[in-house]
Amino acid sequence: MNGTDTPNADVREYWEQEPCGTDRAVVGTLQPRSLEWYEAVERFRYGVEPFIFSLAQFTRHRGKQMLEVGVGAGTDHLQWARAGCVCHGVDLTDAAIETTRERLAVYGLHSQLQRIDAESLPYADNTFDLVYSWGVIHHSAHPEKMIDEVHRVLKPGGQFLGMMYGRHSVIAFRFWVRHALLAGRPWRSMTDVIASHVESPGTKAYTVSELRQLFRAFGTFSAEPTITAPDRADWPRFVSRFFPDDWGWFILLRARK
Image: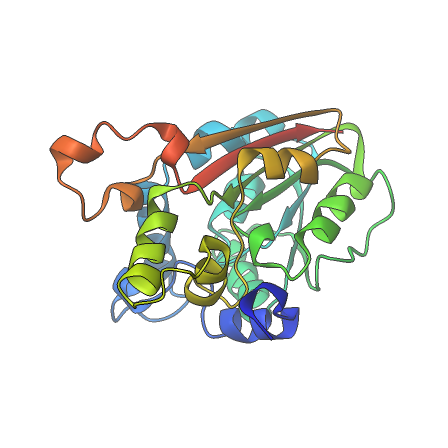
């Protein structure tokens, strides 16, 4: 089996160890799921990825029925709840569901949370005004199934907001140099390197045209590559400051049913 056909059971096993963004480099020795621990996770996330706010625009969605696919440590889910959305969240792991539930409880907030495989969502057609998924769909064994499910559960005119990884990016190239070129295996494809060496097994990354095809059922769709701090890491500033957004690892997505 190669990395590109990794089953979701293996993906789940990886992320059960710790939700994304909660590793030791972020939280240090803080007590897990304490207020201080949650706040450290939040500071790091929005310090590195401040453009989440410009995509999500949390406060503009007050009162909407929203679903987050892949709640992780609950950092964004907290913002949706604070904004007054009617929140629902799913994740492949118990770790993420419990971490998010406890995070919301710290602030006296609530969401309908379920641990499920989002390739088959437990909701009726046309349920949600908004579906949000940041950096999750590309970890699925079958991202196209998740996207089809997102489309199904959105109301007519409902909106999807999210992020998926870009293959034509500085970070993807760096991984290829490290694990293919310098490893004496320059014939390895970028797809294989990413699937084998980026986060959970089977991780995928896309071109804008490939994403447009995946979201073809939507009435409108836009994909916006965005340069991030990690894209610029290990490069001299006088060089990296000229990197165009088209080389970004993150592709910000907007789609409307």
